[in-house]
Image (cartoon, rainbow, N blue to C red; front, top):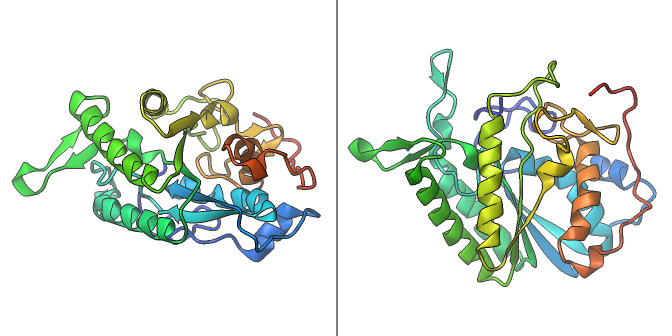
Length: 287
């Protein structure tokens, strides 16, 4: 699940790895805002969203919560690319390497993040990426090699890249908030464990430890909110179908997550929850 290549997720259908995250539609945002206040043109703070397609599907809820109080969410997510994962180890389906297009991810992610910073220095960089759990490809030509997840070399390369990227973000005056990532839910088998559960556990431990030892970095445990019982994760939270395909957030799920997450970012304008935003529930779900 969540291999690179074209995505079938609603709103992302047909987009290829390395593509820019599409902005939410006006209709989608209007639905999420309900009877709440409209967008204000006065920008008091900025959040820069960096990450992959799962981060991209969080964007509608983040904008619906932030815009009415003047918190602008700059979109620097890149479809199918992690923040610092770069090229991912090959994974073959029907003879084709579905991760081949990640070769350009390091360049594309860095470019998207640079554009986002130039749009206005962020108060918070929101880091939401799950590709860093994967085996990495490093080097070129005859020196190219794959670093297995959890190997000393894998940790060394990831930590070096994370430190460099955080240094760049912190130089703008931003605090970096890293989100732990909930494991996948298998469509049709929501109570079954997935092969990636251990990879998510390793990634989340890495993020938590990194944040604890790195200035200007915090971690918020999104995994515990979306997957409160640990894997296998429930398909719904508070009767909301949070992740429509078991990995990417539904519009309703993005709003649920944003209402919980945004007041924790340390931005004064977001301290008071906006209770006029609708609470969307999907009844009759069976976890």
